[in-house]
Image (cartoon, rainbow, N blue to C red):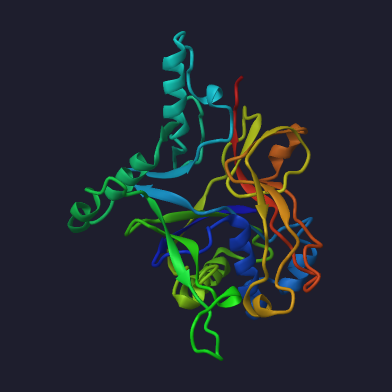
Length: 340
């Protein structure tokens, strides 16, 4: 497999988080309607996905373009004491240090995707927003830089309602107005998707074409009212991260872990729902899948696991409506060395 970076630019707010397993599901729907995106068609590819994935998508990560390209990733789900020095004898100073470092939930790494935890630069939401604002056009910087609450990603409540056709208004029960959370990025923000591609089954051009269509029609919830729009800016081939000396995986997407010796992660439950025409069917929901959220750290049971560029496993038997449905339980990873 080959590793690629796909750069996307959000054009609207989003109702669904850009996580790797959901991006995979959206791409599969594009391949269902355009079989030429995958050699041999989608059904054949899904039948062997558990043994040979045609593509593995990461979640979307902020991308910073300066003298060198850099990516902003989630702080690893390791104990804080493993990442930050906490040798203060004074208890109050130690508590202050913990409180400060808890807010530093992002880390900046170079485009080589080499991660040295001892040298990583960690930052909080405000610092990330400042980095992104400095990249925007000069005429927009003055509009963005003054807000104390300005974050790279801002959440809001999107109103919804259902009209009772008998009364012509909203009402109680099923017709009661409600809100759902959405979010939007800073203007001109760019995100990076890392994609592993089996070029015997598909190509980066086909992946890009599928993402182009997703971005044009909308990703995730509330796409019908204009949310989830983005454009694909560019694609770049990247070298595989060097695994020499590494003893753990840092995951770039939610995954269902396979055999491992130790793991540090945030549990994430995917309450999956069918998309496209099945979303309005009699049973649009899939079985829940318990996953480890992106930013997890796993110590493999077998050192030979570093020979495979992804970690995890595919999940099948998740739908009674569509028995052939598959959940991407794989995640691209960065090899790291954890010393403790």
